[in-house]
Length: 173
Image (cartoon, rainbow, N blue to C red; front, side, top):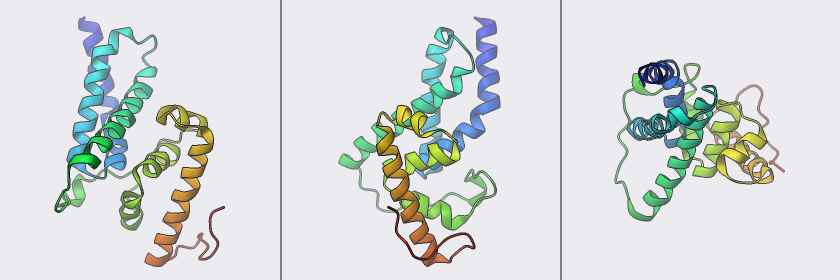
């Protein structure tokens, strides 16, 4: 068990920052992201010895994040009504490349399924098929959610200040 634990600890040390960023992008909240990642890593630890390849560990955690996020959102949407969200300090918010505040803000405003698709497709760089498998939806649904999300982001970012590469008119088809 000693070697197995060391391998697990090494994995957590090497990948936890990237996985926390993914969890944050899904939830839009630093504390919820930490809770989500902790839950996913606990699940991974319980199944660590059953993994055939250690390379599958990150995919396992990513899938656990998405599954736990979806379950959490379903429970939350039917019970909790937060009065206000108090943002954490800028230093605590994990971003990939320093971050575009407008983009992160608008990403958080997307419906949960669209946000999950955008995070998996463009942040995690998964294919349409991998994203569909991760979310348990069809490839066509992934494409549809992607199109709607990008259209929404372009529209929101266009009104918040256009960037050089975006068209100001034209809807997503």
